[in-house]
Image (cartoon, rainbow, N blue to C red; front, top):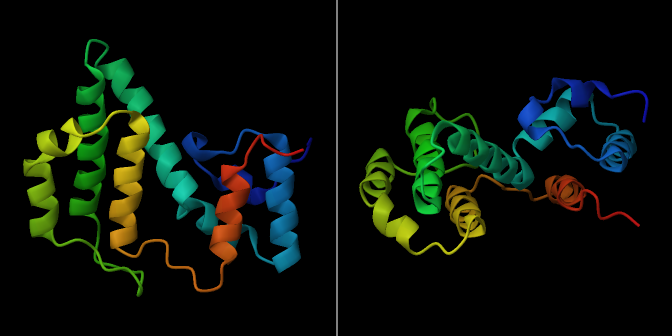
Length: 160
């Protein structure tokens, strides 16, 4: 694809879909629903795919900053970063979300070693973060449209 849609240009580098076919599929999806570029941008930014991709980006940054850290130390740094973000987030703008309380977040930070000790791979870190976001109802999607967009992102590179 020679032309990059506006929604794609708005995305931070860390979450841009790489696969050209994915960009085309998302652009077809956008046109099919008559969504604006801003709506697709927002849909991508709040997707489970972006949450996972952002955590992978954070992991790679931590590896560069802490080249001698163990896997568990790196996983802990990713999870702490996510918890700190939740702790410092502005008052809720999503009417469906039920953010974790400050006490709950601080408790998880305090128990980070116990939490991470049960992880066997980075996928476990991602699963924990997605589950935590689901507890907050971050992926509320009564229409199914957000799930459809997320599926397009998740199947990147798997098109026949």
